[in-house]
Each structure stands twice: as C-alpha cells, then as structure tokens.
Length: 108
Image (cartoon, rainbow, N blue to C red):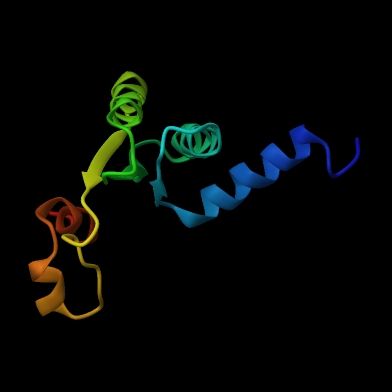
C-alpha cells in the first residue's frame, strides 16, 4: 500500500492526534472541520473541545448545524464571540477572558 493512500493518511492523522493528548478544534461545521473533529473525538474522546466563533459573517444555520452535530456526537462545544474572549499568557488577561474559555484553559 502506498504511503499516500487515504487509509495511511488517516492512520497518520490518528497517531498525530493521539500524541497531542487533548485538542481544541476550530469548528465551522464545514466538511474539513467536521472530519477533523470527528476523527479527533474518535481518538481522544472527552479530551476534545469544538470551538465555534459566532459573528455576523457566520450564518446562524451553520452555527445550529455545529451545535447539533456536537450534541449528537457527544462532543463538548463552545461558541465564542471574537473580540470578547482574549487568550494570553498573563493571568490578569486570562481573568478578563470569557468564562467558557477560562474553563478550558484553567480546568477545575
């Protein structure tokens, strides 16, 4: 089997994800992010979170599709509003970020 076959690429992706231990996937509900999210969840289970950015350019229908997919698959999903959630290294900045993002960064 050629190393560039879809099956080999999928195995390589799963091995890569497994080495990460946990991931946050930028999830638009499009084909690419849905595939990556599903594979990541199959490999890492509860150590995966889907993150969708809500904006005026992101259709509500697609946000609802993202929420429904995650609910159906049992994948943790958060929606952020760009400009409100701020991620940085300093604790003071982290304390001002959104509560849902703080929960991911600083698990209880």
